[in-house]
Image (cartoon, rainbow, N blue to C red):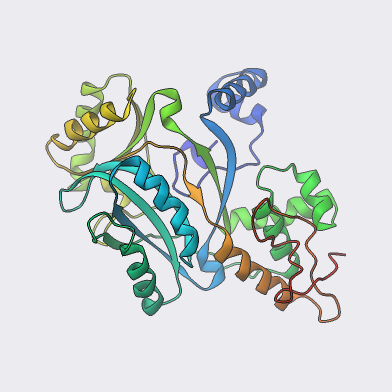
Length: 343
């Protein structure tokens, strides 16, 4: 499902049909669909979420690691993140950190327009830490997005955010354009890196974990990958694309990803300890308890502002979509975002 067949931090291409995916892996379309249906039934696959590139909103993205006391406190902290402005997404995992600490950690991605806002948000996030400390912020190498977006592009983006799993035909009707027009603008948003479709998956449902291993240097990658496969023959190695690593001096060439068997949280802890002892491994992380949580409020407000700013003054914006329990972009009708026709 990933462009180029390579695992990427920036997600999949939702335009790939089951027939195209089947062609890539040598399966019939019906076999691909059956596998995806099985994923849903097992609780592994929960559709797509949409992550908007903060660069198109005049911001960049940083990441912090917050120590938490187990997955229960991590789940509580995920709820508390709703109150922190600028949070884009988060997840709870287990691993070793840059400084050698081992345990559960809440990984949080935050949009930041400048250093002042970064520091303010980090002060708030520090209160969620079980130790009063955190690691970061680490800069994420977010792909550039130089395309100049029109009012219609922003409306398409808003509809997709509110309905990431809707069919193109339904989204076209919500925006009020033809399917051909929608497909054209949707493709521009994807190809210009304005939005990223993230598969919402829970590795533990299939008794696997998504493992990230950071080597001390690019020359160590092949050696570490071979040792990982020797220790865990059932693991499935994956290449990473789209992220420079957890610190400025690291890059994607030093990072390995794999799906590794692990049947319980205790097995995940044992896995991390084992992998961390492999020579030349600097850091190991496991994405375990549930999928990433996406937070839309910061994006919703700014996209609605862009739509209002690029619309004719006589029109006003009334997006026809209401996102469940979220401030809707396409249907913002508050006094802050006046109602406008989508015609």
